Structures are given as C-alpha cells and as structure tokens.
Length: 247
Image (cartoon, rainbow, N blue to C red; front, side):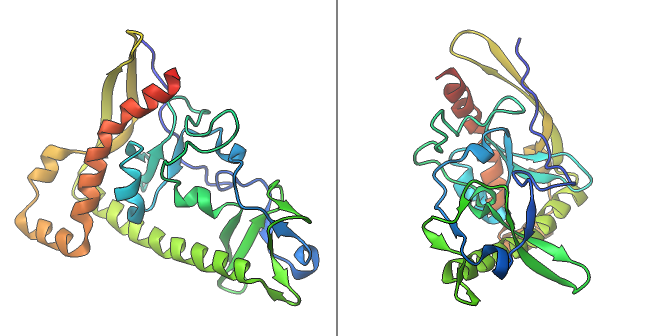
C-alpha cells in the first residue's frame, strides 16, 4: 500500500515560493519589467497551496480542500500526492489547462509584508524571480511613479490580505465548534494499488449536521454554509490527483 506524504503547512520563516522578497524600490526597479506568468516552475515543488475562503467554490471543482494542521489550521488546495510534487504543473511548467489558479499563485512575485517601524504594509517583490527582467511586458514604474500594473498588484495583494482575515474568522469558528477532524481515506488507483491519504484535517459532516439551528442561521447570514458544502464536495477530487499522477 502506498502512503503519500500529507499536505504540508506553509513555513513561517519565509512565505512559500519566495526566496528574496524585498520592498519595491524606484531606483533599483525603475527600469525593471514583469512578464505575465506562463512558467509555474516556482510552484512545482509543493503539494498544497493556501486558499482563501472566497476561493472555495471555484477551487472545489478541481482540488480537494483540506486544512493543514496547526494552532490555526490553514485551508489548502491539494495539488499533489507527494510532498514535493505539484501534479498541476506539467513538464513544460505550464498549469493544467482550464484548472482554477489559486490566488496565492497569481499573486507571485508580489507580496504585502509588514513594516513594523511605520506600522503599515509594504508591497514587496521576490527579486529572485525569473519573471522580473529589464525586458518584459509590464513596467513596474512609469517615470517617478508606480505603473498602473504595480498599482493593480498592490490592490490585489491588499484584497487578499482582507480575505485572509475573513478566512481566519471562518477557521476559528470551525475549531471552536469542534468541526475539524483528521482525515483517513483510501483511494484505489487504476493499476490496482491503493493510496492511503492521511495527515490533514477536514470538516466532520456528522458534527456539522448536529449544529444548533441558531449557529446554522448565523453561518447562513455570513455565507459560511456554502464554504462548508464546497469543502465537503471537494472530497470527490482526490481521484483527479490519482489520474494526473498516473498520466
């Protein structure tokens, strides 16, 4: 029986995918440009990508949604059955055609990081990214000012930061109501082997059904019921990963 390594939680020391994030600088980056990502090599060595609650309905159509265990569990789209393999990044480093692309991937190489001295967030870029070059599609600056492309990136990163707060609120509610349980599942592969899937958390459907009507009403008003159903339905997507692995 094969047992894939469970999805890993993002490390705290450095955000996943980022090697050398630093604040955008007009002097350093004044002539730099960014190409539209078509090469997803930077995402090829992970099996789980963080998700925001706003993404659950779309992501559930393509990926199993789980929660990487921790003090505050992290929602994640499972993209591989081994710890260092993303089955949605092909040999040509392209993402599987038509599959939903998580916001965490679309954000790269930009990221908002804390500036504790000035008590604000600063737009940073991973200067190690090969998407950043003097020749490219989108300039980072236009004269002395950030380009429209850079301003859009800032707005996108700020929106993701806000959605992150909403995601934390939802996960805290799941935890407070004891709705997260370890998952232990088995999948039969086409070659007759069996894959043991474990090491992550999912929503317990039985405990969810037993929630008091008052909580169900609160969650309906918050839009959380759709998130629960999306996670539960996404459990049917494990076979997608098996099929991609066997290809």
